Image (cartoon, rainbow, N blue to C red; front, side, top):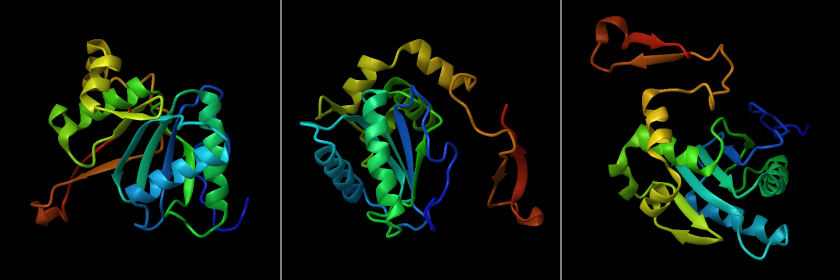
Length: 191
């Protein structure tokens, strides 16, 4: 492993069925235009006639999720992005890439809706969806790929099928108005 390369869950390998990658930045350098440029350059480097990604979501400047049409395309893009990370220049702001916890277009869409609500489809930071390399409306993709049962599963918080976080991960809920306890008023542990 090259010096300066971060290792994420999954590290330098992908499961055989992986279609979704998570990209991280150690600094707030990643931009949406930079991410799209990287994906489009990777498409050309791989010799593809059109992009093979169908879901691009960058909720924060340090985090992005990209789903690909099939595991072979995911593995190919993973190799190119991993090489960019190994350059240690963080261009375009990406310092690490790994297999995401949630896999597949339908599951990523259902997770987005369950966490952000349908009103978020009009947010400028909402996921971009592509079909055969052409951008499509997020609402159309949701109607086409997300079943009521899948959405209900995510809204109930059922994570047994998609949650592969190590069990030692802990979250702390912080409420800014509780100065007497330093802000920490509760915690939640994964199921």
